[in-house]
Length: 307
Image (cartoon, rainbow, N blue to C red):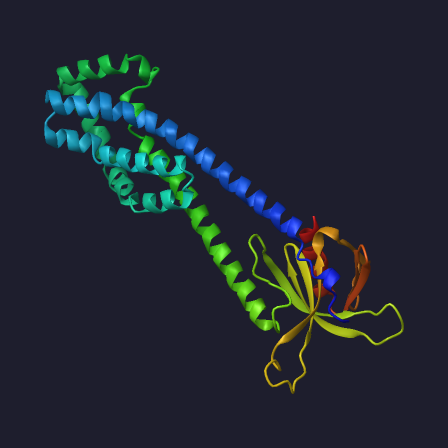
């Protein structure tokens, strides 16, 4: 099979569509996170402004008691303001990265929370001025019926959600990094620059040897195939005596998957291998393997990729 310029088109439309989908997902995640963070900040603001700041000024509670009840709440509030600042400007990664550096504040808050709650209950029993102050503040319309006891656990709830969000963010970064390494690895396997494997939005799926069944009575052709999210690459080994490329693969064709229809010709039942049909507007590929598990896996990967 000679390399066909007509089949070289790297499925740009599909790549753009995938890139757009991932961008929409990223924007949706950032928007949901920002909305949650705004609500969380509004509630923390009530505690910091109407309790911590005023209590410090009035001296209703001793500094040690204040520290026990409210702990690192002011620092947590500041950290969330920074996160919100980055999210508002679309800097999801930078915002979460900075937030990770402040997670220890939540750890301290969590460790102290049980004692903070005990101290709060104790002060409400013993300190009449504080009890009256608390009741007065909670009648403010901004509190909407919430009490201080409802607001103090918020950092713990937010921390659990934030850890989940950060974990997902880290996993996404790792997946993208691993995928980029795979793209570069395949690029290095190919001779020359006939096809640029590394492209934004492209994901590596799998690779392997398959036999191409000719349309006429020629012999089967053994080819190494690489499947990506938008293209399917056919390659063959370079001549073993080639001075520079004896260990590389020569790209024979690149098939855009957005124009592909995949069918399993045989291999539906237990047996020795199977045959796949890949139909493109100007060509049909018949690919065979004597390993049925292998052909089933190829079929699953191909049908998923072309959806």
